[in-house]
Image (cartoon, rainbow, N blue to C red):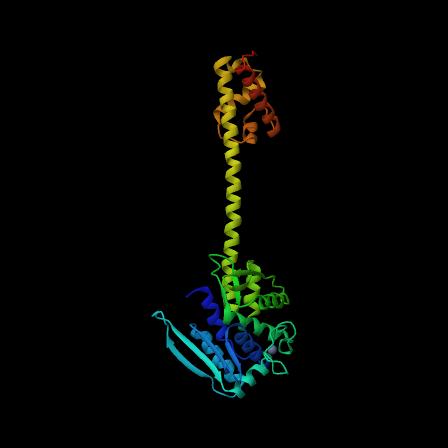
Length: 318
Ligand SMILES: [Zn+2]
């Protein structure tokens, strides 16, 4: 199963919420993915069609918990002949449909379906617990989250831009800084930052998934910082090695042209030490000398040898 379906599976098994939260979660599921007909001409219907049996079950149970009536359930084969099924959960009849729409605040007091300010000014979303439930419902209905091993991405799909903007502001309430991108005809509200996705999981009460997400995130962070350090150390080692190689070339050049014995004692000692220990660090070379010399002293002498070699190469004499 994908990480996304693991999260949904966990969410659909949450229970013990107050009725106000049940209503808020229902409102989100309806608002984000149900088909609603509500007029004399088109009839009265609220229908959720999903391939995800867990989401279908959740919607069914929430409806039963919040209202007395029995929702209708239809299971059908996928048209394309895929193995999956489509689960349709619906509420029919004017009285029931109106009751659901009014209770969830999807229909205003004047009997109009008005989603203009639905998420910004809605009495059913006053409590924080209900806001959490709403986010959970929206995610169950239209959301997904990528396996953190692959990528950090959390999204909820909206059918129109106005709703996407509202959802973005709504998520801001929890400190979730979402962005919106247009994908085909959908407006997708998404989170990209690991810490925010982790917060979102926790807000929706997917605590098991959140722990799993966090564990992977910690391992990834450690791995990244180790990689960075290894790369950095490797770069330093390369630098040291190529500097030493250049020093040896210079010393060899001096030996072949004028001989190391012609050098002043302090330079000669360092030259021999370097030839003896091609990979030693400057500090170690310094410790080989009598009397020992500090790192900067060694560096100074090696530079001097380098300048001499250069001078000789250019036809100069010592
Ligand atoms: Zn509540």
